Image 1: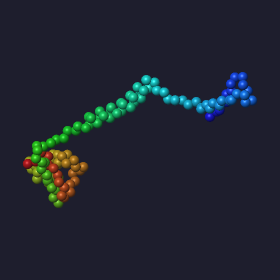
Image 2: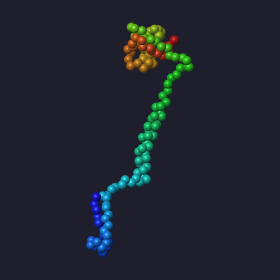
Image 3: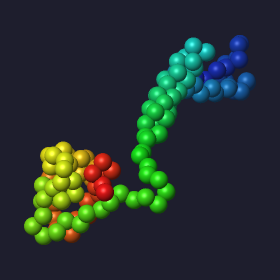
Image 4: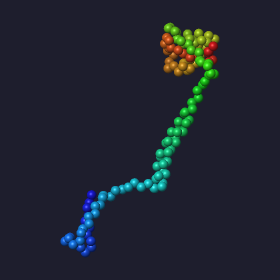
Amino acid sequence: MSTITLTRAGSSFDGSAPARTVVRHPNRSRLRLTARGRAVLLFLVTVPIALWLLVAQLNGGAAQGTREAGAAAPVVVVQPGDSLWAIAERVAPAADPRDVIDAIVDFNHLPSVDVMAGQQLGIPAPYAG
């Protein structure tokens, strides 16, 4: 910070006229947005928000299959020593067990074909009944 002492014209420092002290601050640059700058800033803020809302809207309405009221998918409880092959043959004896196993795995969102005793498995509609 610099200090400048100003005196009136024609006066001296002998005390006949009071001196005035002015304090100057170093140059500060202020950010000033023009109309174009405000428009660009508004664009940069609103476009990502609008894109996020669009993606959320498109992904928000995933369709889910439903059954008639009161009708539940048949459930089979895995017995000790059971495999998906044995369950597939028991549930749909006329169908190819490989197709039934694939349908059961997909229907129950199983990570593998391994099942444990006591596990409950839903049976897809084409093989139920």
